Image (cartoon, rainbow, N blue to C red; front, side, top):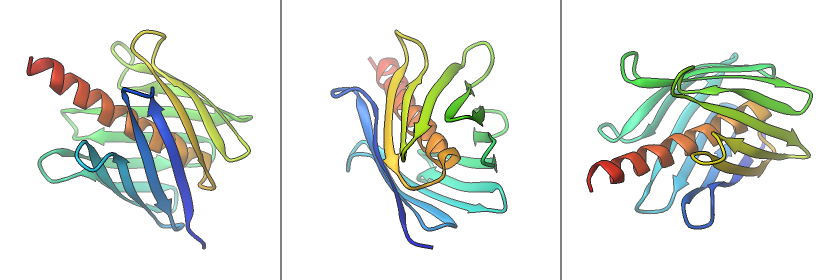
Length: 162
């Protein structure tokens, strides 16, 4: 299988992260964010399962769960401290929830022509999504949520240190 790129941005022009990822049919690798603020992505994808790590040993999180053309059901982080991603893919849309029923964020994304676009979260605390590439829609949706989580974690860390 040839390399398939996932390129784009989650967030706005001043507060957001670029995605530069490559998928070879088995591995999703690359970087979300810049050289100093961001995380490396190293995930294995096989038989409808995804597993791996985003970021380093101390400043990162595990990724594991299921990816199918119909649904994404993935845990980001550990069993105690982490976030769930549950989404369905139907007729060119990706809809679901990230990080829980009470404090989580909605996913409202559209997929077509190699472009995934829309929003994660609400009008005030959400982020715009625009990704392009030839990777499967379920993998692009996961990549968008990874970027959202990295950005949200960085913003929460900055807010707590002031």
